[in-house]
Image (cartoon, rainbow, N blue to C red):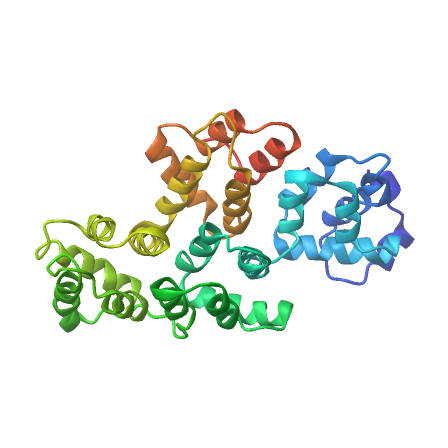
Length: 324
């Protein structure tokens, strides 16, 4: 590879980029992305072993050298699940999340599963950034789009979560008992469910505070919070509250569970696996790997290897980063 690099060529690179990346940029040049001779393994190896900022640098230099947009070239060279992963990696985490939300409410029907995962599993500060990027990308307000595509208590919950602006770690010790009792009295204790009270508490309190509330809740209710949700509400609202509580208690375990469910059959639910691996690969995928091993007594790496194949398998295994 290094034989392609001349002193004059290196001098033409104006961005502050490591010399180790220069051979990568050259190697990722037109022949690799030419649709007549696509080298998928090289594309996988380079793009999965770099951070988002490094991938952007590579794309910038690719365009300077080839006079072509690298993302357009990738779209022309790749297809299927491999294309979905690689193009996902060319977005920042917030851009990817915003695009997934947009995709879940675009066109006829709503992909509630994706919408619930993306809104209910993201922290307040993540959602603030997702909303900003959503507006930037699509020239629309995320809340308005979600409101137009959902209804009832499900819509009320998603909008309450999306409107959170101030990330907080405050624990209000005076309110722990009050909130636990309110959750119990709004649900298990009465006939019917006061969903508005549940939404208020779960959307307006910090994660550390809610963890203590759910623990105190057990002193009032014969069921824990997740069991209470299953008894009190159904459908998309049930899935949304369960996602929230699971993420409040252990977010990485929630994603590990989702990956387990997506790879229970002979073949994986590729859309779910792709979404989780791509969106979490620069956030907490290593911790998800740990939780996955605890839950399944088998590593995420081994499970992906058993339930996927071809270049899609290769790109996921590379992002997974190794066996446990």
